[in-house]
Length: 307
Image (cartoon, one colour):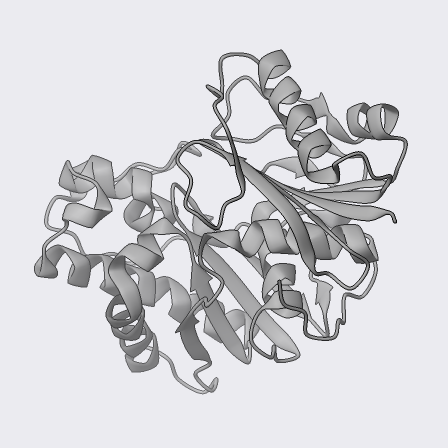
């Protein structure tokens, strides 16, 4: 039996899983701390070098494939990247620059390899493994950084020349108690990512998101809500789902407050439903499996699948 492999190539951890042709997960593994549901734990130190990181990925693929032939591999990685040619340069992984990942993986495993920006892949995870998805679904990841993927009728929306729209790099009229600390890793000082992401929260509040008090969470929710307002007004999605460590740390009440801000600042365009993703930290990994099953540039309209 051939298997399909999914990879979540994150800045601080890697995750891998193998699934059958129906999308049922057979085996999984990850680096770093693991829970009982994470499968095999790989004791690896990441970002020492590109070569060592790639060796870890190859080991993880071998573990989840378990000697069975691999039909295809899908992968989620941080942007920027060239999804058509499979060349990646994740912003938060300084050792990874212009890496021909597609060529490397297809040479090693002799199967098709598809890679896309992690938020695009996560949006597909919502479609394949999540709750029933509407025809226009916007997925946001609020974690170390902030990004999004927009699906229209099950297919990834792409900009001119196949570019990935960077929803986190919009400018908003933010509200902050210490505005001097605002800075985005793209180099500008007014991006939404520089206000509400995990890295931004550490810079602005001098502590991680899980240590924010109620007033500080409310400030982050306000700024996120203004960004949601812009996205709702321009894209008019049916639904916005939000995942990532900061979103889960704030919880449903944080998302609800941001949604209220969005609605209070939105006119003419109907307000979309805004919810916390139900897939936890597996959204991008599950999306990578979906891409392996269907191919990166096909309309991805799946039956519901569970692991």
